[in-house]
Length: 280
Image 1 (cartoon, rainbow, N blue to C red):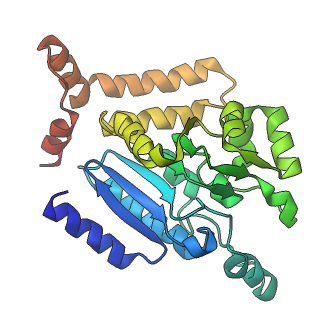
Image 2 (tube, rainbow, N blue to C red):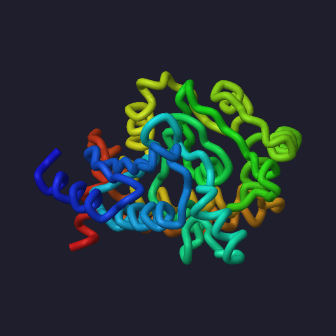
């Protein structure tokens, strides 16, 4: 890690109280950092995550972001005292992931995001990562959509994302029972995407994120946009029109020009150089 990178990481760590940020070359690792509470979600944690993701999105040297948890858990859901008890005592707080910034819109419009789930991911600890581009699970991870156990219903469009991931029947079972699911079953269902040994989790997630982030940032965003728009699109003609519109944008883009030139010259494409020239 270079001195500027170390300074940037140090600045992040000084500014954040409930997460940490670490630069691993072209990937930023954000760690939920309340291990004594199994990284239970709070509005402050959410605000810090939004800030860190937006900062990475604005940094041309960053290709992707990994989110993980410290200690034994990934995120044990909303902090009972900071969220639920406050709502019962003071009335609805309106506290939701993302705060004033819609979390799902942020996640689906930013650079690639990979979750490295190291332990329990419960309630909002799971719904917050369902819109991510990849969910990598440790073999010690466990998952639960236990909103019903708290007298609640799911949020963050999870009643849309879960059926897309696992199908209607499995989504009904997971949400109506609120049961805990081991990592192996979660991957088999499609609730998570990849199962790795616990000790290899972060390295595997960073490596996966890097395979996304090495590609042109503009086209990555357009692909995420198309996936978001077309995942539930019933009309294939509408889906094709959206794709064709973005293809027209791609054909005149410097990234496509670089890809064609690299192919003809038998060399790897350098999309970072293209982006750097555009920023000058």
